[in-house]
Length: 214
Image 1 (cartoon, rainbow, N blue to C red):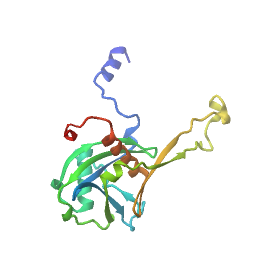
Image 2: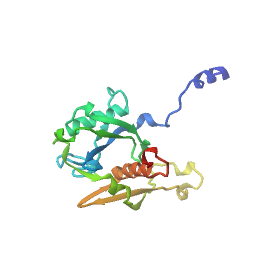
Image 3: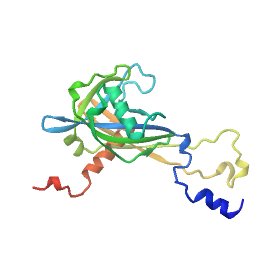
Image 4: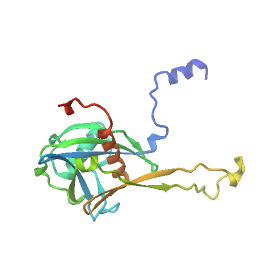
């Protein structure tokens, strides 16, 4: 292969995340609801009949399907299906930073406003119940944080003889922050809490908001 062929292969290429084709892709929505004089965030409790993570607190969302237009459509579609509301009742949908988890998934979070929450009819096969938390409470509440450490465990046939250091190789290990929010008798943690923390940090960033001016 000559240099020009290499150039032609690379010149119009759009970079992506290395290995992302092997990742499972999910999109979620943080639903905002107007309640009296405050905005509330709506959370789901996963159905107790589900095989994975039954009874845990989460936001609406699910796997990105090939038929979805994009990740934003996935978040809207999944929210519509789980909460039993029409897609056109979900407004002002905006993206947050997407996240690559250490478990082979890419998460695309969005925030959106649900205009007719009284029309929700929960999909009981997926959602046990819902509850809301005032945004004003979350904005002034710091989560508890803890660290989880990951340990490297090579397979038995790993070729230690091919690397400098052999079995005494100094593997780089990493740790992951886990956040916990508490509201009344609810515990919000894990991926849901990390996305929530990211959203609250955006809102609390020291940026002048013209709508806050007197």
